[in-house]
Amino acid sequence: MHLLLGTQTALIVSKNISEIRQARWADPALSWGLVPTMGALHAGHISLAERAAAENDKSCATIFVNPTQFAPTDDLDKYPRTLERDLEMLDAAGIDMVFTPTPAVMYPDGFGTRVLVDGVTARLEGEHRPGHFDGVTQVVSKLFNIVQPNRAYFGQKDAQQTVVLKKLVRDLNFNLDLIVCPTVREPDGLAMSSRNRYLSAEERQRATVLYQSLSQAAKMIEDGERDGETVRQMIANTVNTTPHAELIYASVASALDLSELDRISGNILISLAVLVGDTRLIDNFMIDDIKP
Amino acid sequence: MHLLLGTQTALIVSKNISEIRQARWADPALSWGLVPTMGALHAGHISLAERAAAENDKSCATIFVNPTQFAPTDDLDKYPRTLERDLEMLDAAGIDMVFTPTPAVMYPDGFGTRVLVDGVTARLEGEHRPGHFDGVTQVVSKLFNIVQPNRAYFGQKDAQQTVVLKKLVRDLNFNLDLIVCPTVREPDGLAMSSRNRYLSAEERQRATVLYQSLSQAAKMIEDGERDGETVRQMIANTVNTTPHAELIYASVASALDLSELDRISGNILISLAVLVGDTRLIDNFMIDDIKP
Image 1 (cartoon, rainbow over the protein chains, first blue to last red):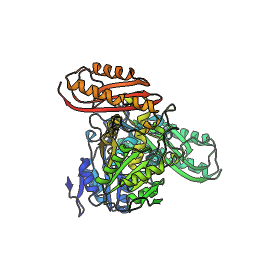
Image 2 (cartoon, rainbow over the protein chains, first blue to last red; image 1 turned 90 degrees about the horizontal axis):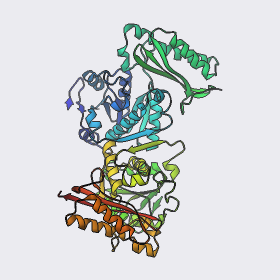
Image 3 (cartoon, rainbow over the protein chains, first blue to last red; image 1 turned 60 degrees about the vertical axis):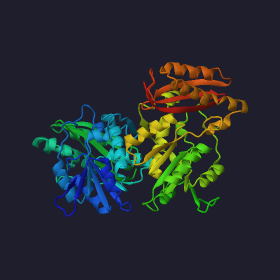
Image 4 (cartoon, each protein chain N blue to C red; image 1 turned 45 degrees about the vertical axis):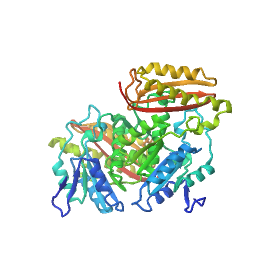
């Protein structure tokens, strides 16, 4: 399918792997950027798309709500689908091609291969969403092989995902650069997320507690606090005294292997997951070069 | 490293992934064939190399005795290494490049990613060598990503491996054709294998029992036998009445999913594993389109 939208050139949209490959390899000398998404796009995704379009000869986004990274209790069925608007936004961002497979294209009858990154998948999101990262590494491996990009773009908002995928790329020797782009935020600091649209007006206001507690943690550390548990406790108290908010975890960890820090130093990842009403939100700050 | 051997053009030999990639992508319009090996090359490997050289613009062989596909009780340490002779043979076969990594290049500190094909790995070799195919799919995924070939060549002698790798390629969408080449045999029928050199003169003579029992099984089926267990029993009796030979398994299975057949029909794989002295040998026949 070729869509003629706002721009001068046609956006290629296909759920067919052969068609995607044909376009990808039409000129093997061209470089390609890849932006994997689950659709329901927001300004965070678009920042990835714009960067992919700018840094490569050609760029491909994928829209696929991957069932294997959702647990039975997760929000797979209600995950928002906004395909037409997504395609317009990607076209406007300069994307050349969009891969929109069905589950049957990605997981045909008889499918049964797993890609498991050990270690860094066990903590934080991995601990609270068992099997989540196994689904992520499985589908991302497939997307890497289908598009064979030179560069792939992911958001810092899913901090642990970027750590897991960097390990995947290194361990399995995928021939691409994995590029992590900054979290895009609403004016009040809330990180952009497709799940924000689940929030009621009241919950939306309270959801700023993630950004506020991260900012407070960064300030504490800037002011000299070096005890990890003290910072985690502050985050927990800040979240749990907020109406409609319930802490799932608060972490002050090594940015390298995501192990929790007793003493804060070096490159760190402060992260948290919070249930705001029924909606599960995550956010994080990376801080580099903290003196012991 | 560039070796000038018997032929006019230099054979590129490198243990360095960046060097391999640089040569692979020097001209992105050229097609590449890949022949993964563990070295100790024989006429079977060379038939793969010659076909890869003939069917592609360029061809790459790899020589790596992959530790992750050997169990602690396997023959990793004594597995034969004959690098100089291997390089001469590959050069003569028309191969352009040989990747000869060390274990540290393939599995650097902090490595921890697994690639698991489910189902077809559980039977036959997988049942008797737990973890073997997990090591194979792990290393082959890495080699596919390092070389990014258009075609990859494997021998029919490792029949189950070809079934497992076809599933790997399909499930993870590796962008290549997997090509299975016929088993090359000694004049008396013994399948070429790097492990044949372990055999004493007496054992070497007795090792023909694999080919003989397979031939006998094929004859039985041609003559109308359709009971799977009868054929398996014949193979077991033939092997176990041979001095120095001990049956590990005899299988008459569906070629598709490797499940054992009660009634023989369709496309089948007859396979066996035998201990000849201390040496573990395997062999198989594929027979297509058997009428019920």
